[in-house]
Length: 532
Image (cartoon, rainbow, N blue to C red; front, side):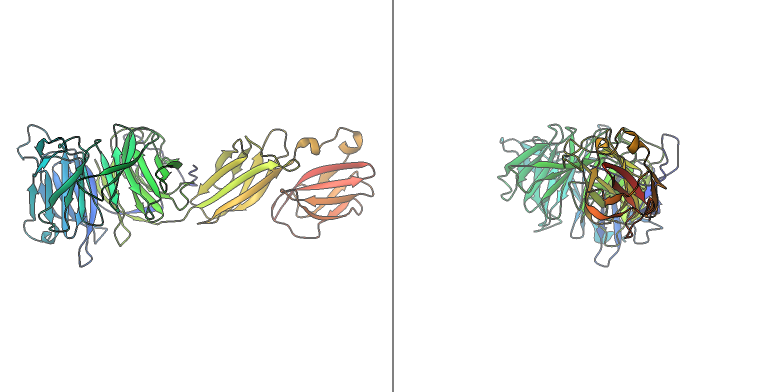
């Protein structure tokens, strides 16, 4: 995993108000007296775009069709709660809340349903439902709270972390009658903190077990566990499946955690592909990740929103971010809670606990990636611990035991790479980053034992100037011949020295090459840098 960025980094801490961004710009904001929590979006039949935003006091509906001036349209007060979650189906919003307090004067809402067609009315149309649910053990309980919910493409709502049973997933049919949902079944082996569903498959976050759980919910009242898998920091908060259902992305809601990608195409052989953090601080807590085409849009406490290019999920690359909470940094449950990226306009709406609602305009760029292979030019054996430095993107890597290294960047530029390894001739060559391409770069290093010899005849030979443009002197050599060899050990040309002068026959790309000179019984190899 590599995240490589060429940006001016501005450090943030409590009390600092500077904001940093990459490929995301702020369009508009709306502030609140109360802290915010989660957020979702809704587009009306006429194309108007709305943010459905949770606060500790209730639900705010904000029109963002004019992204510069967000307009608060409705507010539905509810029980005081730090946690709200919101999703939409048809022209309705469905809202849950969790962990209310005894001093609340408003009863627990259970499931709040809002008719979004009433957004322009003097008062909104809404209701709450508190159905009695029978658990698999035979007991029953009234729905009062739930931590999260998701609505799949078939119109089934899944309420996660409810007060009923173990808090797995309560399943409701919305499609038949969206205003009057019908309870149809549940999964209840583990408490699910969050989850998402596609094609009757639940990808659940068993936060306290530190793993994601894959559940077949084809038969709603008889669910079947298909697989489970641990996540890196063992506090699995959020899961989201790729559009082709082959890669799962997870976050652990804990400091110094990761956005992680898994190959789930074979549930009997789930494998981790890569993991990544935000460039705004390794101690930051990731919260909610959402797949948007080939990108993953993730909210981070204290570090705003991040865009990852996951076109090649085995190498995740950060290509954008916007810090919505400049007053906070590092570990801590402050700042950005959620980010919704699915508007047709391309806008992202973010809920920041302290700062309020942000309307952002992203530029989705494709990352440039390269797979590097470092090996001995003579033996062809892989070389480990080679130091590789890309000058333009200011990224330093080290080759693995197999001589391999991967790098990625949001840039699409001409760069140069320098390679150093003890006992080998330093190598430098130009390299062109290419957006959307996963390139392969092979680098052959020449062992110094094949370059330097101790006798006086060899010591007297000098190549100058170096670097050069293909013309140079080899003083100290009489009646000699030369060979030009590239970094992969290939012979490019050969010729005869004339008055100790070499003028290469062709124009070669900028980079490190090798000149092998032979005269009499002697031979010597020089590294030479050819300039463009």
